[in-house]
Length: 217
Image (cartoon, rainbow, N blue to C red; front, top):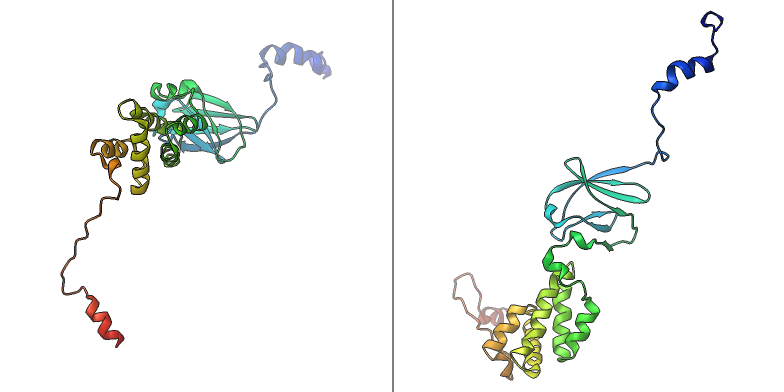
């Protein structure tokens, strides 16, 4: 270094250091990227756990950036949300602001609270509500129907509502509309199920009972 008349340290301070970039505030962290499609319930799945995104992104393609402690979700290169990583399989991490207004109205309700509320009007009401919720992948999507069924007691009596729910269970008709139809048609007052009409079809390729009795002889 004699011909430069300076040491390596002096050259670094003079030439390199003034143009050096600041070091990152945190250490490098490995990240895994994955493409996903936002589900109808405004969640994306990563390693079995579901994370919410703003509902306006339903059905859109997004990129998931996963680090050991953080899940970040991007759309068209822009980060739209992030969550602390959760390893609970089939669990949900949901932010209130990501939910549609219609779902936010039911935040104070839980499946257990709705079932308890339904039980006040009869065992059949409670059993039907449980069936309605079990048909939905995301419980909040069943709350409107469940509360609608329970509130039919305001127009009809609790006794009729319980009987109508009992009839709906017999028909395996697990919906608000089914209970309304039963009450409007007063099917809850019937003691037997309405028989299902059987239509017999005559056709040359259909073998009647006589064919089998003759074959057995």
